[in-house]
Image: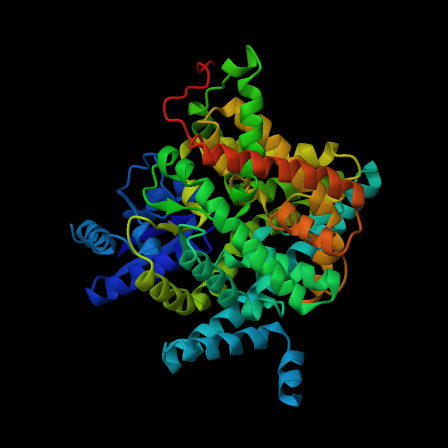
Amino acid sequence: MKKVLVACGGAVATSTVAAGKIKGLLKENNIEADVQQCRVSELASKADSADLIVTTAKVDRDYGVPVIHGIAYISGVGIDKTNQEVLDNLRS
Amino acid sequence: MAVIEYILDLGPTVMLPLVILVLGLLLRQGIGKSLRAGIMVGVGFVGVNLVIGLLTDNLGPAAQDMAERFDLGLSVVDIGWPGASPMAWASSIGTIAIPVAVLVNIAMLVLKMTRVVNVDIWNIWHMTFTGAIVHIATGSFWLGIVGVIIHSAFVYKLGDWFAPVTQKHFGLEGIAIPHGSGTWSAPFAVVIDSILDRIPKIKKLNFNSEKIEERFGVVGEPVVIGAFLGLVIGFLAGYPLSDILPLAIQMGAVMVLMPTVVKFIMEGLVPIADAARGILDKRFQGKEYYIGLDPALLLGNSQVVAASLIFVPLTILIAVIFPGNEILPFGDLATIGFFISMAVGIHHANLFRTLISGTFIMVITIWIANMTIGFHTKLAENAGTIDGGQVASLDQGGSPITFILTELLQPQNIIPLIIIGGLYVFSVIFTYLKFKRGKMYDEEKTTGVESE
């Protein structure tokens, strides 16, 4: 099963919203994946075990794993495009 | 009346879930979704109380022993924003703060007083905290609501003023960040930046931040910070090794478990947040509006990360040196970057300047947080989180907005009020004037050459 890390500053507010939306999206599309939340500061040590990272914070570091900027899950602007990116990444 | 009193007596772990259920039904979220949301909020409270218990029951006594042995303050544990926010939600102000803050936003948008459409419902807890503290200080529920109104109106304006930094420096198009500790502290950074611009030689100074994250990344991980602090404090408390090591693991556990339990409160708020966003989106859409979002957006920026890593030990150092300080920084250390995030942008990522203004910001924060320990402890008792001892938080217990409002209505610390109030009001006016002249963020500006 693929693993998605959803990160924000404190792993409380925005990542909860984004993780909720991503779980819904995956369910609709019948994709099984483990969606977990964490803080941005924990990404470096958790990235190894993940297949995809979605962050609401804009990270400019390379973790060796695809990173999607998931701000659309919070702002609502451009959410279809972000959804597509997530699906493309998990289907490939 | 008897029914209301009965429900109020059941405490926040029951009351807020009921409020969320009713709000959810009113906002047409359906019975199933609303019920689940309400229960989730209750689950969050139960979890938070367990984790705060783990923190205060174990780190609290150790901190006191350490304080006694070395004649240090540092006996009151900082529970951080993950600990403070549930207490704000659990207060009586918390039950109606969301509609109040949203209505203030709508009124200001209609009157063209702000361009910020705040869709970030979680961070209304900051405004709620101010209201709850004012309520406790004055005994007046309505003054508490006035506190929520003033705090929210003020931070929407801050969102407007710092939008150029958010958008040009951090590249977040169409976004403003109207709350959180990074935004209230930003006016100080604006003044300090202008002062540093005027000092020859100093104005060219900068540090290289590139390698910091690479070298110290693991040390900056919350679980490591927690375990390390547990280790050091257990040692300084004079504990035997058989007590030090469990304390270290427990404090690592607090750092990991804290967001895991607080997020359930957010999960419960999601239906309300979605509904509020729906209402705001429908009416206020287009280029003339900024979407108001969480300061977490700034915490991924590598320069913010680098500065955050430095500010973990630096904040502890300030706490040790600050005369008469009683607070042991802990809960806010995991996200200390919030305090200096906007400052990083204001200083064009000049690390030297961020260190200067960040130090100033943390000194003011710790000073204020010391003066709010009494109210904060009462807030924690009201929420049923503690029944003994004292608590504090840097975020939001150390915020000048909360402090100035509370002191103006119920003066207790006149001299600090004059100093902090004076400095803050001056900084805010200075910031406003800079914004008015269109000089909040000059993309052409370079602040000094990077040096190793």
